[in-house]
Structure formats: structure tokens, C-alpha cells
Image 1 (cartoon, rainbow, N blue to C red):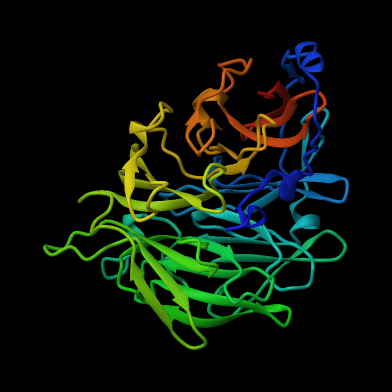
Image 2: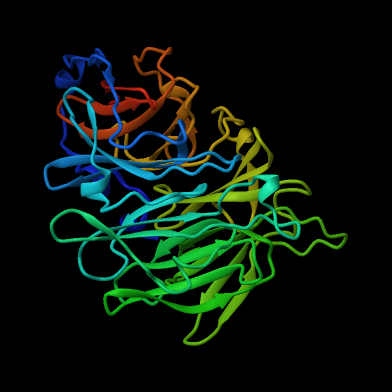
Length: 426
């Protein structure tokens, strides 16, 4: 996986600046954190659900403007709110809702599942928005013992910087319990294709980006209890792979592995790439992260985020010597192991040209607990930034300036917002 294919890179997100600084400049840098006044958030349409759904938060830059796009949703209940967008004042942190003008309409959401992609998915050179949505897990809504599911959400980007709701057969019009998705170039034509995973008989569906639209190519039913997917060159052989990681396997005879899947013109092959039940008997994978390892050429390090219930989570890391072998991450780094990780950004936060990870969903914790700083070889530690520990709502990076060593964050909750600028340089 080349650096340009990492899921969410700061450069593609927000135009980060890179430059070198002398030791004297670093010593004389202003390392103090600045905080704007808190701003009240008002809504053009009254909220039906009062909470920001933590797995669906995106800041995008369109021209010179920055926008926050997120959904207001809850897992339980029968009330639905919408995707909402806000123009960001990057100096004051004021959020002004512009859902009607930016997204084109108010689109109801169930319970979207990250990643929330901002990529060109129809080959027209303009980035689009996509997120899977499994709907609510409300017992009263169950039909024949199953949750009804929901539809995926796709907004086509337009040349004027706004979006319009897309209608793609088999992608945006079918109710399913969607759980994960992945974006990458599966057919080697230079653009981004899409894989959507669901807990249905299809398991995974492949959509190819061609002729200015997305078209379903095939189902990929590897019978692996797939809970998360990722697109990368898994074994460094030059071929793009779909990585399938299993959810909980409760069979008497286990049959779930991490699998490497390769597409042909009309079919696919699969290769088991781990021991059976790689995460143990009771844990299933809900998220995969892949990062190029600076100490091992172009090889990727894969991180598998697994769960057996709320706040019962573990993180596994592929070994450098053999990507099919995993180790519990608590044995190789001292970052908090049970932070209820869900969504993340991959970006160089400390300006050392190594990818760091910011877990953007971990509101309730100080910012430094949500950040993994790369020490090299994709082993991480929490930073020691100067930041008020009482600020525990959402932190989303807006921009970086290497000459000052600072990263500008939007800090917000459903009622208040502000700008916090932190010295994050190594």
C-alpha cells in the first residue's frame, strides 16, 4: 500500500504544510496552547437526536472553506435524525449549519459505520462522500429475530463544491446490516473502488469505479464471518488484496481466519493468512488499519481492532517478520488498551514524517490519550502535549503549520465549539 492510499491522510484532508526547522527555531518556538472562546452551535432544522454519532465525523476543505460533516444518530430507539454539515470559522470555531446548501438535502441516517470516506468514487475528478449504515439495534424493530438494517449513503461531489445524493443500484437502495467498508484500487486502473461488508449472505460486495459511476461487480462470500475489510497489498507482492478479518466465530469447529482475497475478471481466490480464530474465541474484528512500516521498506503493518462487547476491546498488530503472525499490542506499547476505539485519522501529527494515529471518537478522554505517536517501526506512545485535560469532547484537526510546529483542532460537542491550537512538534 503506497502512502497515497492510506485511508485518511492529513494532506488529502486539509493541506498540511511541511518544512524543516533548525534546532534554534525549535528551541525558540512558542509552545503554548491557545484557545478561542466557546461558540454556541445553532441548527437550521431542530435536532431529533441530540448526540453526534462518533463514528461519522469528517472535516473537508472545499476551495478555501472548511466544513464539518457528521450525523446525529443513536444506536437504540426509533427516532432518526440527519446527516448535517457546518461551515467552520477556522479562527473562532463558530459552526454555521449549511446542510441544505452543501449536502443538497436533509438525509436521514440510522447508525452509520465508519470509515466515512471522502474520495472520488466515480472518476470525475471530484471527491465524493460515502459511509455504510447498519441502522438501529432496537429490539422492537426486529423482524424474524433480525434487525432490519439500513441503506448506505453516497453523495456525489459537484464542480461547484456542493454535493447531491447518489442513487446506485445494490448500494444505496437495499436495507442490510452493513458493518464496514474499504476503498482502494482493485482493478489497477488508477482510481478508487469500493468494498462494502454486511452481516448477510453476500458478506462482501465489490463496486467498481468506471464510466463516471459505481457498478456492482460481484459478491464475495468467503464464509469467514467477515466483520471488517481493508484494501492493501497485504504480502508485498505488487498485487492489491482485499483483507477480510472475521467477527466472532461461535462454531464448535472454528473456521475463521484473516483472509487475503484476490479478484480475477469474474471470480476471486482466497488464502488463509492467520491461525484459526486469530483473536481468540470471543473477540471479533470491527476495524483494520494498515500503515507502511518505515523500518521495513514498503511492507505494511496491520492493526486489528477487536471487541467482545462495549468497552471490551483489544488491539492486535501484525509482526514485521511475518504478516500472518499477530501479537497483542499491549506487549509492545504502553498506550491505553481499552479506549473503545472506533474511528481514526492517520496523519503526521509531530512533523517527523512518520504516520501517527488520532482516535477521533474517544470523547470523554483527554486529547493526549487518544493520540498514538509513532516512535518508528509503527510502535506508538501517547504524547505529552500542553492541553487542558478537562477538554474531553471531539477533537478534529483542521490544519498544521510546520514553521510553528502547531496543529489547529476544532473542539466541539452538540452545543459548543471552539478552536484549540496545540504545539505538537516532536
